[in-house]
Image 1: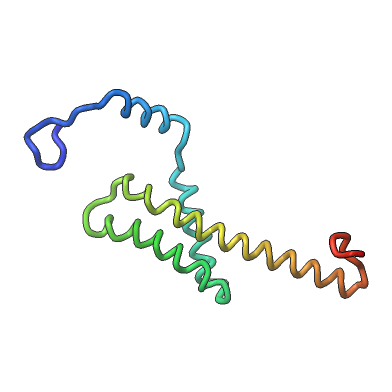
Image 2: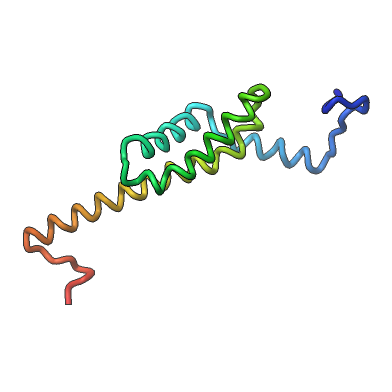
Length: 122
C-alpha cells in the first residue's frame, strides 16, 4: 500500500509494529469517553467563570488540536491522539478546583459549628 503520494509501497518494520499492535490491544480511549472529557472541560469554561482562567487554555488547546486538522483535511483518528492529554488536563483542572471548593466549604461549616480539625488541633 502506498502512502504519502509516493510510488514506493510502505513497509512494516517488525519490532516496532508489533509493539504498537500490542499496545493498541490493551490501551485505548473510546469515543464517548473522549466526548465526556471534552464536555467536562467545556463545562468548566462556560459554567464556572472564576475557573475560566485555569481551564480555558488547556481546553482551547485540545479543541484546536482536534478541530483544525479535521476542518482542513478529513477526520482521522490520528488527530485525536495529541488532543487527548489537553482535554484530560482541562477536565482534571476543573474537577480538582471543584473538589477544593467543596473541601473548603466543608471546613468553613465545621469552624462555624465550633468543631476543631484534628490536623490543626494542638
